[in-house]
Image (cartoon, rainbow, N blue to C red):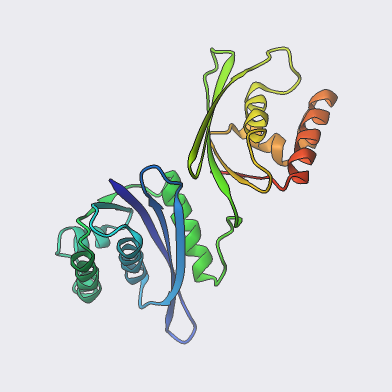
Length: 243
């Protein structure tokens, strides 16, 4: 089933008007996450939240079921159950009209904001409200998942880009000056194509810190290896983002 994570941000201006931002992460089977955002005049945060749901329906494929996830109970009551606050009735009706026009069976469920894609939707909404574009770099990108168990001397790195999936099993050297989690991250970076943005999940805090600032490595050999990896990635135009 197609899935969408939505969130909104709102701020009241000195003149009494409100400005809102909405964010949307759309997940279609077999494709990388698509991210959308927008700014709008809004009387309150709930109105911006409903706009995010509307945009999810508009961007989802017509004729296919869609599950929308939100942390806003007013949205769930208005769209999912048809009995939300009366102030949202017109906006909820607009969502339902779009659902019928595009033939998109809609389900609206609650998830906490701590979920990865909800956090992304929240960041998109905040940036849109401030009039900023997404901080996500443009251009080709790939999702990377690092799976590592402390008891095993191996990590699995899974990379997914448009039209391709790559899985690598990385042997971790217990005698290396570079921590095992950072070894796994360095291996993941070697899978990137020139100019690609890697969206890395489940990288340890240690690995993230050492990648962002190699000088934090306590041992000179680790510092040198991490610095070289960063320089190589920078030379190829590869960017690493953590989610």
